[in-house]
Image 1 (cartoon, rainbow, N blue to C red):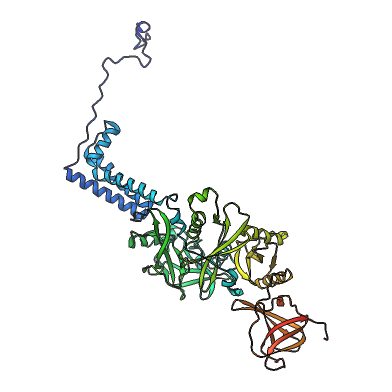
Image 2: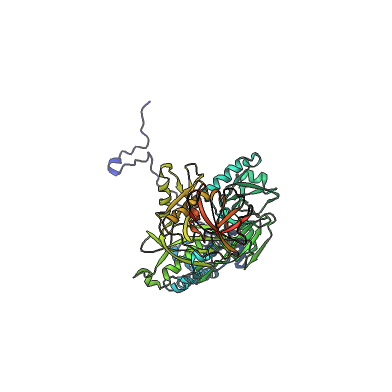
Length: 591
């Protein structure tokens, strides 16, 4: 059979070679013209469809993203622009728009078919521009500097010494470790729940504690447990370092751990659609009922500037009952967060002498330091942070204490070490043990502003305590207990001559003098002053040395022989009881 090469054109080399094949197509198939889209129904029908689709898209977005319907909220504009975009996109399909003319024809179509959303977008853009201009710190520096009402104060005169059972000894990390360890001891909970990492420091029944809620371990555990809610919350005692799981008779059903309608953020938004909120805070009242404190954010400068707090919504975590309070109840400890307080002080420190001064000259320009801590004063929780010059971070010029419920703030001038310098000084005292210091707490010890901090080991647990003098941070004392640490610190102050004589305590009676040997020493803080109770040999009674009146009492030791004076109506030292002592001097045995 002869070989035939089909499709080979003998004239290929002269008339052109066809590499694609072996037969040319004389008449290629013509392309079908594009079928035009047809508009849907009447103009009213199309508009109705556009509106319904836009509303549905808006409801879905609102349910999941929960934007505040408020002109001061940035997320509101994102929501509004999204609705306009959905309407225009839907109109493209319902009107049969072809788009053959490019962008120009599309914008012409939008102006004709989507006039209302088009005008809304233009109006919102203008509103954003004007609102941003009116909020611009360059033009409104004076208003920003007045956000935080500030008073000056005398720290040692206004802040009393606190007793040992009021000094918080744990930071966030240590509290979290104790909480996780406690939950791990409960077999019926540890497999289903975890601990919410956001601890809140509050005063609870006169004690500084940190509290937090549980949360579901994962989505499946939420499904299986959501009917009963979260069964407990956690309390960490900041002084005794004890953790307690508080079981509830009825579980918490309105929390940040929920996923649907009982989710706290969704619960708030559906009931307060126009309010803006800061992050919710978990607290308990004096009866132990769990609540979410939800501070209301307001913008006080232009549209977007001057973030402040105006009251809060309190939500019962068990029942979901809620109420807005412009003046929150006294048992609530935290309404203002640390970042709002520090931001407002920074505005004051930067701009109280004008915007230009913050850049050129920088006269009296100050900022807060890098950290903060909390201290309980008169059943309120105060936030502390240092203040330093903007041109140098080597030393503090003072510090502020802010009531986290009312925002009442006082500035206490006190030149001294920064918190980081104090931490380094404390760590250098125990460098062989490689302990790490927590962020300092500011205390009044013997009328001396003093940094107090815990020293933690590599396991994250508190091992020791340290006190560092703010003004002379080379004065450092440590101890395995707070009492030991304070005693060592007071003795160091006495040796350095920094403890003042103070005022004599007025007591009635005659002054008497005796000599004896010390066999026991105790101490306690009463009305802000440390008292040393000294028992002499052969007696069951105690001499009461007030450290404010007799500062050298911190130097007394067991077996010291002293000649002491006391005030009593009779000359005989009683066998029992506590006697006010007015002074002493060391004596030789037998004198």
